[in-house]
Image (cartoon, rainbow, N blue to C red; front, side, top):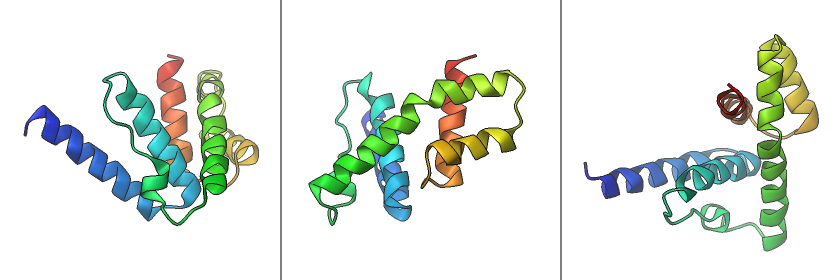
Length: 117
């Protein structure tokens, strides 16, 4: 598969995963994809494209919510390195950023652990 085909395939997969989950998870997954692809100057996926039935106000609220979780990835990654249990970390994630699935919390923690290693 060509690099272009691989990118299109990844874009399609993340779009399908985002549509299958909650709106909050969609915002987080699309934001994560866009952050990773930005360094390659590739076209970003629009949350409005993935969730066309939502209003602009709802989209903006979801993006703010996802951005708050992104901003705390390093914080939670540091918690991992200080010996806190995963259960404790996930509980704090749920308290600070309610409304996401376990998949989104796991991805956020993985990104934070990688960033703080």
